[in-house]
Length: 399
Image (cartoon, rainbow, N blue to C red; front, side, top):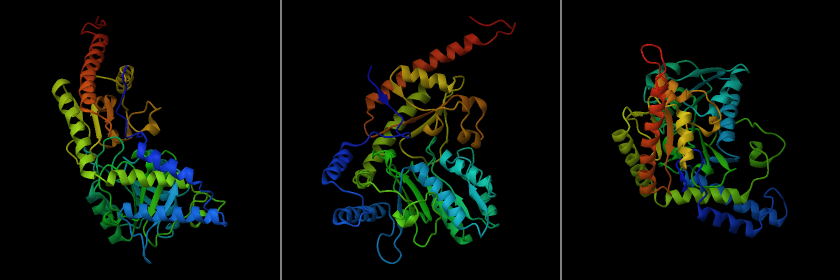
């Protein structure tokens, strides 16, 4: 059975060009960049050159007195934890109050809950039925002092984009720091750090065909941050630990591969997603698009099949060689309903029948057409079973 991978929002396969760049880096034999001897200093020079290049790739200020900084981490979860806790704690003299949206990734909501248990007030910025933050409510919330606002750039389940530039402008006018989780956006849509106007931005390499185990937190010049790890002086003491030149090389190459043809990649992904959606809407009655008409990342499609259990649908797809998801990979082992869809006021039927499909560079038209055919068969089979299990008006089970 041929396998069709449609879970690129969970992780992407590493690009061969990234593997080649990392292999060349390993062959160079870089040692610990913190070592003071000449081999160590050569590694340090290479690392800092990579750091500057990535800041430039992300649209940050990479030179001069106002240069932005980039902290390398193990990935998106660590970057989000460091951003939310580090920024909130370093600015808590203003207010121990954090504003986040209810559709954030678990790595943001989780650290927010931790801070709540340590005296911080956490307020949720409501979203509309499409999952977009309500700006009028944010404006009202910012009439009181806050230490941090954290709102994602693109949602991990629905792909819905938030008006981050507008949110950042409002925060800046009120003197409140703004962090955005751009994990699902970098490498999928144009992302310019200075253009967005945020104070901190999270990214990770494995969502854009880079290696797992490397991410980053981009910080605006002058922003202070409390470290969450201790025991070393690396990265100004904000994230101690030995940096891996090869992993950073892989992340830089992965970003560059996107930047080489952003419009072409977006068109490719968007056309595949739309082709699948058109087939599903035409052939599966009652299909619901979660996120409605809101602007989304080009690779993400979240749909609900009313009357069908999401876990049963995922398992049936997997048995047919198609890899999809029911939501965030960090919560994929949970049977709890999606907090993202609940925050969007989706009803029980919509939530229980929701699946996430995310296409990638290697996805083909044949993959999409085969998937659509398979989904139609799965829906027919599961909905028939569901109907057969329902009692008739006399109270007897059908079938």
